[in-house]
Length: 531
Image 1 (cartoon, one colour):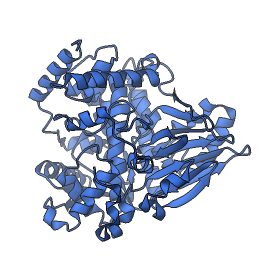
Image 2 (cartoon, rainbow, N blue to C red):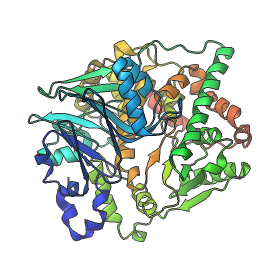
Image 3 (cartoon, one colour):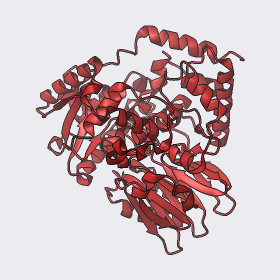
């Protein structure tokens, strides 16, 4: 781990605002932040007993109600159900709803699309926070030496309090198969004992006086009702299409020059279909840094051609010599994600390349959609998952533990604590636990880290699927339709049949039948072993 003050060197000075891009830190002890040099360039805002340091490119909105409670939102949010695109107005509505009941406020929050942190600082100093639907902005929290700290980047807390990396995290990072399935941590842990991650679908509350913390799960809140026949399915399908269409209409109202990043995959095509009939309000692009991406980009180009849409392909060189700043960008990205994993050379080149582009003001990505596509059923070649969510099954979904059984056992314990502390097992309400695992662990941990610490290095991101009500409706469709992608094909057929008519669908070449069989054997056997 590098000394965090390497940015004092002259070569880093012009990149100073790329450290912890679009992040923030809130604390009850500002003194601890003064030794972190780059925070001198951030904006300071006092809310209640907290001092917020906010990156200049990040937006903070606040609203104080009549009782002195402070509601805040960091990031962006909009509501496709009532058409609200102003974050200040959203906070006012949340405050008004909460005056009635917390559940009323949560019902409204569940309608929001965006990438944000939302919280309330009570007049007595207590604070509670939650993140957007799938945690596409990372948020870490802790009470350290009596100080409350919240931050999008764990490196800030590490620097402020000289936090040591746990023995477990060191073992995990050095495990030779750690990089498989993505660089992220299990449950709600971080690499520091004193810091935890805010999990999607939960609220974290911290007592302002005692520092006592509690976790409240607010989703799922009621039994899921799966469409039982074709007539019910059609109604659900209409609802999904309406939400998606309304979402895509609001994005160009909120941002003047949005661009959709496209591949030939199912999620991307579904997003494209929902833009019909306002295609002129968006730009469309793909990028190429590898052979696999070339296949994606060319497929996206053919689909756009069939729709008479202009499509730009950015050819991003993967030659590090083409980027004099390559090593600097690499260092910053590693620091931003606090060294939990290494960035691929291609990804570093992309960030360096797109940081110099200004063709659009926000990228519309099709992430999160996979939550509705029964991802783990495909991964492990299953038509039916085990009914019970167990720590071991979570560990098997998290990593391939073939050699280090001690590490596997420790990971089991972490997932056991996660399930108990977030009260997940008793609050599944009939939802498929593998979908929730993908939602809260895979996306909430890995996805949030990638968006927060890597992609935002280049430009802001909007994810139209990142809406709890939309995902909830999509999960209410039959498993078979989700597992076979029939749901997404039906959405496309309703919104723009011409996309399906192209017959173009790019499939990840890594997802081979042989790999599926191997992973199924691994999951079936390892999830039953007692050691």
